[in-house]
Length: 144
Image (cartoon, rainbow, N blue to C red; front, side, top):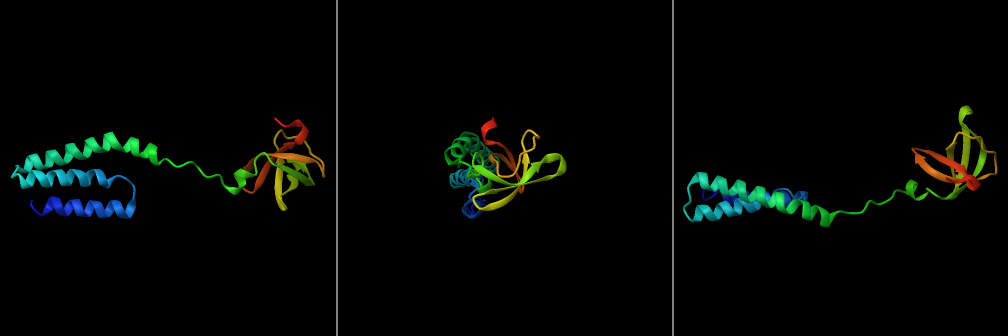
């Protein structure tokens, strides 16, 4: 076991460097602790016990803290950035007839009314949501 634990330590560190998932690093610490037990001529059962206890304890104690510290804010997509903006109706919006187009920032979008009402051409609307390639809109003066 003089070779197994140090080799496992190295392999786990390489895996951690490659994946950066903060999982194998805890087991690498367990392998390092087991290497110390081997150097002190500890029995095989103690090596495995130390490996399991150290790995599990570090995983339980550290992972939630590290995940919280590394938690990244979500980056809004371009479509999400359009929510709340004003658009101009270029084709009457009628949900039951499946018609309706708006222009937003120079881009032509399919659109439906949020409340199912008809919205006439040249009206100004507010983008309430984006569903695929379709905007959900409401009249600017009847904004929710």
